[in-house]
Amino acid sequence: MTRAIGITDISAATTSLFLPLTALAEAQGTSAGKYLRGIGQHEMSVPCEDEDIVTLAARAAAPIIERHGAGDIRTLLFATETGIDQSKAAGIYVHELLGLSENTRVLELKEACYSATAALQFALGIVARNPGEKVLVIASDIARYELDSSGEATQGAGALAMLVCADPAIMAIEPASGLFTENVHDFWRPNDRTTALVDGRFSVTVYLRAVISAYDDYVSRGGAKFADLSRVCFHQPFTKMAAKAMQTLAKHAGAESVANAVSSLEETMILNRRLGNTYTASVYMGLLSLLEHAELEAGERIGIFSYGSGAVAEFFAGTLIEGYRNHLRPGALTAQLDARREIDYAEYRERHTRADRTGDFETRVEGRGPFRFAGVRDSIRAYEKA
Ligand code: CAA
Image: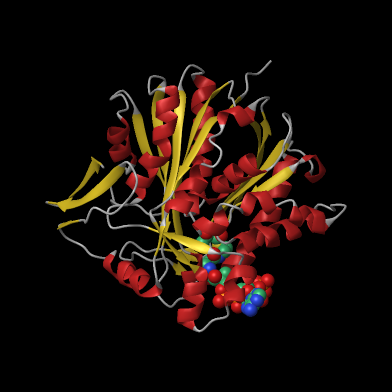
């Protein structure tokens, strides 16, 4: 029998500040209902000066290292849209902060919000060849759009780490995978920009087209039928997007009740409503939210739809392992969300503008996590334990 490979631990982190979307709506003269119900977002995580994708990633992964040790980890795959260097992998800083062995390969992957899924698939391949090894997959992003743009309400920040190995304790990933790629400009970020360019309505259209194409490919490659998926986690740039995706997919797949399929998404949205868009981490934040909040049985199959603008998408599934709940850290991310300091619109705007500074600088001590970004000295980013 083929040995199961998949996720044996999962842990997430977010920033120390947040902006309620009611405050954003009020400042913009927009109805709060548009954000709360229209796009289904309540809050967005905002980083402090001394928080970035590296500190978030290390904060997410530290509990995994604490529980499992670093011994068997020979690969760290870091997925992000928010790269901090044109050349060097951000994961190398995380490797140092976590105290991983020097006999580790560390790599950064990029394709908008999709690359964490590529990292997960590559991790499965590495473990299939070397079943004694573990791979640490980390997705970490700070989603930023221009001030006063239509994407502004869909910003957010967070990181999620997964430990991938043979005989996993939480979820075995099945081999069938459905793929989609099309060269489109729905959301992209040229090298001279710190905020994304986006054609919002078009991005929703491409996302929905990708759901159908990737699902059909998944089924044609031996994947399960829609009726055999207990739940589906979708990439959630905003939670309403998952509802639109499920409506489209359920209709396409001939589901008995499209309304029931859409309401089955509720537990996948609880964390994302408060985090905002976490780009590469978003679909796995949906999975974490589902695992923590739904009563699911061992053996149930969870579909996962990952989408990255530009555009690449993938549909695949995993089955839950007996006793998976004992390997979660229920409420750990919610406690971080609750501990964030609320900021007002003026402070949010000032921080958004200041995040674009370049050259050498020191950061103020602000964040509540165990690691901090100390600043840039002689063009080198400096990190330290808090
Ligand atoms: N009460 C309730 N609902 C309201 C409302 C009110 N008072 N006012 C408006 N609404 C509803 C609208 O009817 C609309 O619902 P439907 O989409 O179901 O019709 C919803 O609120 C949003 O309103 P608009 O379409 O007018 O909003 P917008 O055009 O200003 O912005 C957006 C929407 C284009 C998605 C924008 O948020 C955006 O550009 N976001 C960034 C891009 C994005 O996230 N794209 C998603 C797919 S791409 C992807 O997934 C990759 C990624 O992570 C970026």
